[in-house]
Length: 162
Image 1 (cartoon, helix red, strand yellow):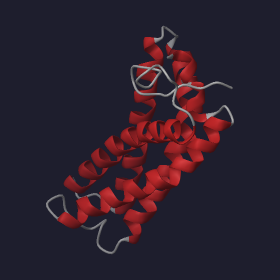
Image 2 (cartoon, rainbow, N blue to C red; image 1 turned 180 degrees about the vertical axis):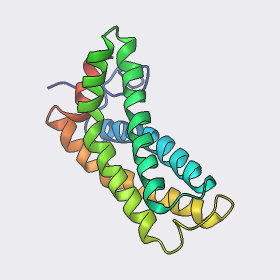
Image 3 (cartoon, helix red, strand yellow; image 1 turned 90 degrees about the vertical axis):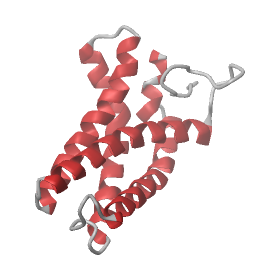
Image 4 (cartoon, rainbow, N blue to C red; image 1 turned 60 degrees about the vertical axis):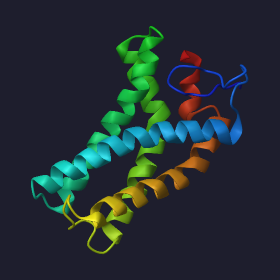
C-alpha cells in the first residue's frame, strides 16, 4: 500500500517524494504527540491549579489528550470534504492505539518520578517530569506507529485524505 507523509498540509516532502518508513512514522508520531502533549499539559495544569488529587488529574489529562489528538486528525480530514461522522471514524482508527500507548507511558512515568505528581506549576520538577514523560512516550510510540503504517493501519488511513 502506497502511503504519504502527514504533515498538516502537504502530502509530500520537498521535491514531491513521499516520506516512507521511519520518516513517515516520525511525522505520524509527532502528530499524535502534539495532541497528547496539548491535552496532557492542559490536564495537568488544570488539575494542579485546582489542587486535585492524582487520579482526577490523570483522568482529565487522558481525556483531553484523546480529545486534542482526535481533533487534530479530524481537522485535516474534514478539509478533504468528508462528513464529520467519517472524520471521527478515521481519527479513531488513526490515533487510538498511538494515543493510548503514549498516555500509558506518560502517566506511568509521571507517577513513577518521586514528587512529580505533587509538584506545583511553579516547580521545575513538574515541567521536567512532564517533558521527560512525553519524550519517552514518543520514543516508545515511534516503532509502534511504523509497524501500524507498514500494515495499512494507524496514520496510514489518514493519508488517502491528503
